[in-house]
Each structure stands twice: as structure tokens, then as C-alpha cells.
Amino acid sequence: MNRLWILKQKGFLPLYIILLPGIALVVLFNYIPMLGLQMAFRDYNFTDGIWRSPWIGLQNFKEFTASHDFWKATGNTLLLTFLRLLFVFPTTIVIALLINEIRAARFKRVIQSLSYLPHFVSWIVVIGFLDAFLSIDGGGANSLLHSLGVEPIAFMGSETWFRPIFIVSSMWKEVGWGTILYLAAISGINPVLYEAAVMDGAGRFAQMRYITLPGIVPIISIVLILTVPGLLSVGIDQIYAMINPANMGVAEVIDTYVLRLGIGQAQYSQTTAIGLVMSVISTVLLIFSNMISKRIGGDSLW
Amino acid sequence: MELGRSTTGERAFNWGNAVLLTVFALLCVYPFWYILILSLNEGRDTSMGGIYWLPRVFTFDNYRVMFSDMTILNAFWITVQRTVIGTAGSLLITSFVAFALSRRELPGRQPLLFVFLIVMLFSGGLIPYYIQLMNMHLINNFWVYVIPSLFSVWNMFVMKTSFQNTIPESVVESVKLDGGGYMRIYFHIVLPFSMPLFAALGLFTAVGQWNDWFTGAFFVNDIQLQPLPTYLQRMLSTIEASQVISTSQMTTINQTRLYNPDAITPKSVRMATIMITVLPILVVYPFVQRFFVKGVLIGSVKE
Image (cartoon, rainbow over all chains, first blue to last red; front, side, top):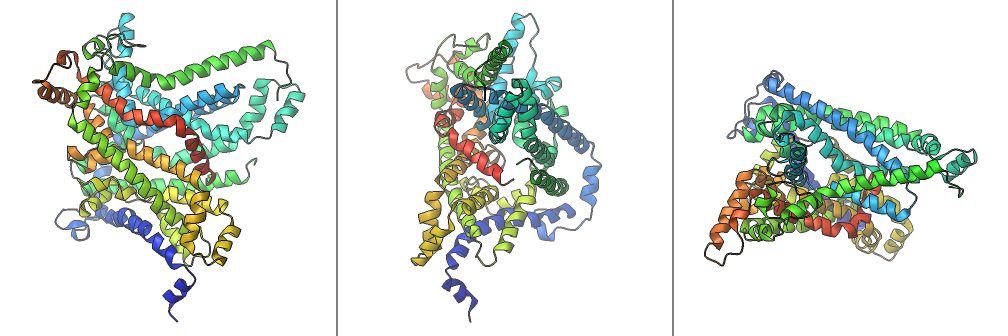
């Protein structure tokens, strides 16, 4: 008769109750902010709020697409994420292949443990490292240059050095950790293949080239495809700590631009419009790349 | 794999490889060492440069200055609190949802799953989120560190998959036959079965909480409520560090001279602050690293 009674009878009620906090949290911090996206089409002001501020159509979109700073930030974002992919991704694979070639188990474990460590410190700490090593007042890099008779360089406040520093710090933090997935895939390769290769007289390089590498191609493609949706976001942590007035021209990315304009200058409507466009693009990319990766996974070697 | 014979070329490769990877691993840890020696070196001496391997003028003064600053100690305490409460709460609430959704017989499971899937795909972005925090009076409030992160949709899907794959249905059935309800199944079967999973995800959550400076920097203005990483972030602009020095000079001016204030520089105090920010992670890391590795592999299974 009563539906609630039936659910209770079957013992489902506790399950619904323990679902409640999670549902409440996604409603409060995910769904309500999604409703807030309508600000992108309104001229938001604090007193009228999200629901009563006047509609202005596509005005906000026109404004940001006409802004030179926005396109500059977009260009910087794409360049930085592309550079990061270009350097971090292949290096990770090479290091994973090399770690796999270590025969002494204990040595291998030590190398792995040490190389995972950088992943666990925050970007702020990484910037602290950089600041310490690259500073003009006694930083290691400049003392080295000094002993070579080179003038000190203000690395952290330089447009020229920003990209190299960005790439090196990205590599330092993520290459070691990134090897985990590949090493796991390698350990799943059938040992019989190696035995057969040795019988055929294949050396270590030949084994690496013709067995290990093809064995991890599926996971390589999946990782590559899944980085595509992230190409529009550099990660606010990394950039925000490195950006300063001196390197702004190359370091300003969409994330920092939104932050500066939105929270800094209270341009709520316009930054919400930017956020909406970015969110739509990355959602589309995410669904797309997920589909492709599933297809690859489907006819993968395992 | 090898048949016992190794050619000269192969031996050369092994050695080259070992050297290369040793250099790589040392590069991964050298920055930690570098900060440590600078934090133990007299500030004025550090600024003359040339320190790479060991402190030149050894001192604990940088740490003394840092520990005499109440704001840093307070920030440390805030960080500890948010990490403990945030991690415990997140594991509980997230695993509750994961458990409920892992039961295939739950009426309405598909639409509920969809509700959480949307969250994974689409977000309202920074500004609407910020306005929602304002409306909920979470700006300038300690709970902004905890409440929004009590539920993680990613961890939920990892847990749900894991529960479905690892909890034997026969055991669940036998609890039901004994008249046990779902809560009994959760506490007596799911929890004990999934301890490695909880350890792994709990550690990732804890590291995330410990390292998060963003929330403190943008959603909290009150310095007394800011966590250590946010403090460090502000300190990386020199002004802040010199303030630490001057306040600590004022507090010690009438005490016995503990250190030579002229030898302290903003940079040397920063080094000490970086050290206490990473120290807890460095101390815990060797003991928990296997869980991290396990965690990332569990997570990648779902892809």
C-alpha cells in the first residue's frame, strides 16, 4: 500500500539515508553552482543576485571574446599544455622502460620510491624550491653561473626563462609518478614472449623494442587521449605560484585570468561566461576521448 | 628471462642504465636536501651563495625564528585539523554513497548514478561556486576546508567499482539470511574487506588536504584561519617573511639573545617554513608508499 513501507520492509531505507549526505553535498556544491551559470547571460549584481539580475543575452561572451588579454591567455594556455605534453609524456615512457630494465629488485624499488616522492609535495613547495635555487641572492644556480664568470640571471622574473622553468618543474614533479601506470602494464606482459625472443637471439634492446614497447602501446594511447581534455587547463596551482608582473606576458593562462578578473576585480558575469565556454569544451572533449579510449581498450592486446 | 650469459654490450647497458637512473633519482630528492641545508645555514651566509651539499655556517636560528611566530604555529595547527577532519569525514560519506550505489538491487539506482555522473562531467566553474560559498557563509570560515570536500565523486566511483568486484555476494547473502541489514553488511563486511582501499584513498585525500593552499588563499581572508601552504604562498613574497623576522625580534628583544637577528634573512626563514610544510609528508611517506601505488592502480582499473 505505502511505498515507503515496502522499501523499509526490504531494508533499503538505511541505504537511502546514507546516500543523503552525499546527495546534499553535490546539490550544494555542484548543482547549485551549475544553476549559477545563468550569470553568464545576466549582468550580475550583488543585490539582485543570480535569479534577478537583468538578462543581457550574449553581451558577456562578446566582451570576453573581444578582449585581447583573453586570447593571449588562451594562446599561453595551449602552448604551455602542449609543451608539457611534449616533454613530460615521452620522458615518462623512457624512464619507465629504463626502470623496467633494472634487474636488481632492491635497487629498482629504491629508484621507484625516490622518484614518486615529488608527486606528493604541493606546487607551492616546488616554487619554494625554485625560488631558493634560482634566486639572485645566493641561489645555487646563480652561484654556479658566477663561478663560471656569468652575470646573475633573475630566472623567476623573466619571460625568457619562464617556459623552461615551467617544463622542468612539471617534469620533476610528475615524470617519476607517471611511470607507475606503464610499469604496471609492463608487468602484465606475458613472460613467454620474452623467453621466445631470447630463443630467437633477441638482445635487450630488441626485447624492449619488439615486446615491451608494443605491450604498452594501448596504455600509452589511453593516457595520451585522456590528456586531451586537460589541454585547456594548465592547473592553477602551478602557474599561480610562479606568475608575477615580470613574467605575466607568457605566464598568464585562462585559469589565472579568470581568477584575477573574477575574484580580484569582481567581474562575475564575464568570468562565468568564460567558465561556461571552457566547461562545455572540456566536457565535450572528455566524453569524446573517453569513447576513443574505450574503443582502444576494447581491442587492446589484453 | 636471461639465459645466464651476458655480453659485454649488455653489461655496459646495465651499468649505464644504473648510473642514469641513479642520477634521475638523486635529482628527484636533491631539492629536499637543498632546502634542508639552507634552512640549517645562517641566512646572511647563505645569501653569499656557493652552498650545494652541506651547511657552511650551521645554525638552528631560522627554526627558532619560525617557531617564535605564533601565526606559523597556528597555521600548522589549522592544517592538521583540516587534514584529520576532512579525511575522516570524506572517507565516511564517500564510502556510504559508494556502498549504497554498489548494491544492484537498490530501487532507483540508475537515476542516482546518473546524478553523480553529471557532477563528474560538468561543473559550474569558479565564480558560481564562490558565490555559493558566500551564500552559505563559508567564506572566512574554517569549515570551507572541510565541508565542500566531504564528498569526492571520483573516489566514490573507485570505491563503488571496488566494492562490486571484491565483496563476495555469498557473504552478503549469508548476513541477510541471519537477519542482518545493510548497515551490518557495511560495517562487518565492506569495511574490513576494503581496508587497503580505504588506506590508499584516505592517504590521497590527506595529502590533498595537507597541500591545498588555494582554498585558504581565495576563500579565507583571516590570517588566523589560513593553513600552512597558504601561509607559505604569501611568504614567497618577501614582505611577509621580513614581517616574521621583525615580530620575532620584538618578542625576543627583552629576553636573552637567542640568536643574532642580523644573520637571519627572509629567505632563510622561508627555507625553514618549507621544511616544516614538507616534513610530515617526508616522515610518513616511506611507511605508506605502497598504499599510494596500490591506490593509483585501483583507480586506473576503472578507465
